[in-house]
Image 1 (cartoon, rainbow, N blue to C red):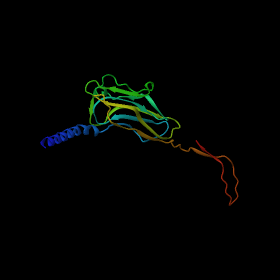
Image 2: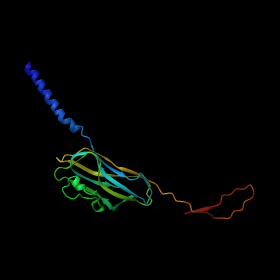
Image 3: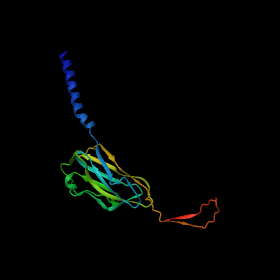
Image 4: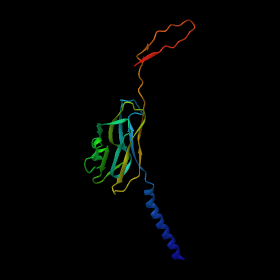
Length: 199
């Protein structure tokens, strides 16, 4: 009887030990990767400034992604930059690959020794887009093809949030109205002349 109780107790201890080590892995909070814009509305010809940031993370060993730019927006390659000192902050093993049109807007980093641990949002990229002529509607800028790993080269759970900007045609002020014809009307009559609004 004592052997049976001892076996049950040992089985329970093993079960609780396994649960104690497995639950934190299952309950890991996803890392937040987000794109934010400096405005929520724009007109054709406007410039919109964007930031890509990573939220709280532990032992990040590598990150890669591509910018996901919708039609109607054009990235200004000269505006793309990483913050000063970022390579040191995130323990990069070399220069961070900065997105450009020639590399299809690809960003890449891998850790050197300790990786990166942070408790608040860290901006990792800034860039600007110009709104193309004739563009209207909601334009969502995001990131895609994301790979996020820890120092053990295991995938880390993540959430990606993009930035929506509503583009509308800019209103054009009326500078004049020209009536295109001469009308003769009798008392009590109504007529609508043809006219041209400028511009």
